[in-house]
Length: 308
Ligand SMILES: Cc1cc2nc3c(=O)[nH]c(=O)nc-3n(C[C@H](O)[C@H](O)[C@H](O)COP(=O)(O)OP(=O)(O)OC[C@H]3O[C@@H](n4cnc5c(N)ncnc54)[C@H](O)[C@@H]3O)c2cc1C
Image (cartoon, rainbow, N blue to C red):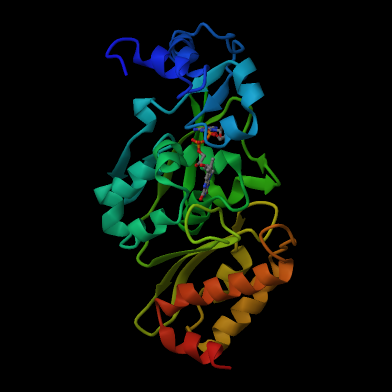
């Protein structure tokens, strides 16, 4: 290939599609605000993170809209510890999460969890904010953060408020978020014990049939002093298992308690049959993932249940 005009040559030879030739100019236009201006109050601009959901689902809308590019915004790209709270900027990518020394220190299984999320090119682009706002019932980062009992810092033209992630989802793709409001950061206290599980039709490069995460704290007597659990693929939006967590809190970990908690959990989910499995199968999957969370805390009661 020629040293000069390589891109044009690659397009002319058919190695790249013709629209590649226009990408540089389009990016320049985007950055210099040549595209349709957002409404004066900012609500007309479409926030764009890595585009791995938006550009797939609504490419025409993105093309026709003013967009607010968040991916490169440095203020949204940091991961830091503030007091006893971890703060993740909304435009932090999955790759950044996985490479963060701070997060690696608090999540020993982080690399293994990360391998279950999409692929390297997608992880390089996919942002945390995008995962949360896309509101897929099986969004991996969303399920992860729900069990961390994370708080969202929302920013609407400089006016900020905080909302618990577990209160952010109101229905299928319905959020407690005003038009024009951006997620600025995600905040949570690092967990003492954390577990994330995901089952897909394929182990890698696939979205979940069911995914789940748990943060459970037990005291020296084996009593559960705090529990936060989440589940994806078992309802119209990413589910914080409030009733199950409430049932577990204060109880001593045992086979009977886990069995009873599973009954509560089955009552608070509403999976449907679809391409990823029947409703019955998803219920069974979540039961198994729930037990997997607890096998890392105390394997004996879990084995007792599994041997019944
Ligand atoms: C091939 C492929 C594989 C995938 N695999 C997985 C997977 O295994 N697990 C998984 O969970 N997901 C997966 N996804 C989905 C996607 O990659 C993630 O949901 C990703 O985190 C979305 O982030 P983004 O930055 O690309 O979002 P974008 O597409 O840029 O935006 C998504 C939505 O969020 C809004 N938005 C973005 N940032 C903000 C913000 N800060 N404030 C307010 N609104 C905002 C946008 O307006 C849009 O509505 C996959 C996608 C593809 C294409």
